[in-house]
Length: 323
Picture 1 (cartoon, rainbow, N blue to C red):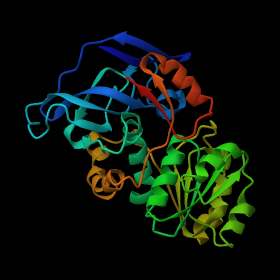
Picture 2: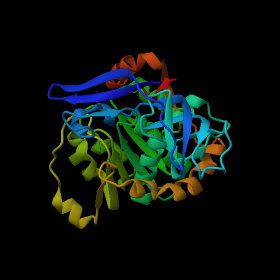
Picture 3: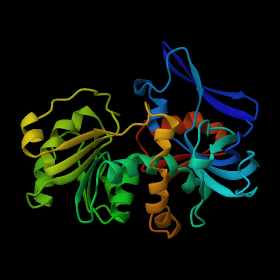
Picture 4: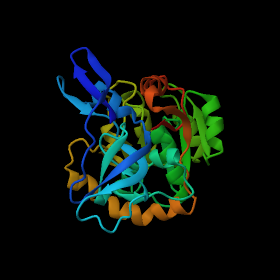
């Protein structure tokens, strides 16, 4: 079968399409014929450290498709079942899906929409619910709201009853996101939105910050936090990995700052939140109350172009590969 890999060299990351053997499912796995797979910026950024120099890994982290073969203990899943989930090597014609990661594809979602859900929504669920403890009517600030994670955070936060302010350098993107429930959009490429945030919230501030941008907006977002505010650090597309922190604000406002990454987690630790996700979020998906926003779909052979498009920051939401 055809499959994409990423080689890490001293010169950077090299994308390679090659022929590999079709994988065989283990006892608690199914083999999925991939219909569509979602791009995630982190797997294409050398600075995220997902691939060691001199190593090569199969690419792709989330996908949707049909079950075509079963492991010995997977008799409860019918052949032909439409599924989606987090799976390694998703930029391939076939990939393995672990039983614990397997979710039935909501009938209301296309293959492309379902493919853009598993990783993004699990990351957002971690930020908003597991660590973010988001409550209805709280204020959420999403830095870089037009990114894949940003749009997913906007949509899930609205589905959970929160009020969302989003920042973006594009007024056009913010206008599009108004249709997805964005309460207030702030067109800002620099960290100069404090006064506007405080005006919008009548001086209250933000309960939960989602930072998909990086260190360039870190300090400003700390300023915006309200008493007992929480701060989720999920990305650094600006390449700025260091930032000043206002210790007085951290101390007096009783703030909580946390990172959102699965890089150092074991498979069991990554899978642990899935049961709560299936209980809390899957019904929202099946009811059509949360529909992933797909910006553009590329054919399988166009993954290099899809990567370039995503890295150009033209997109709103998810970029998808159709296999």
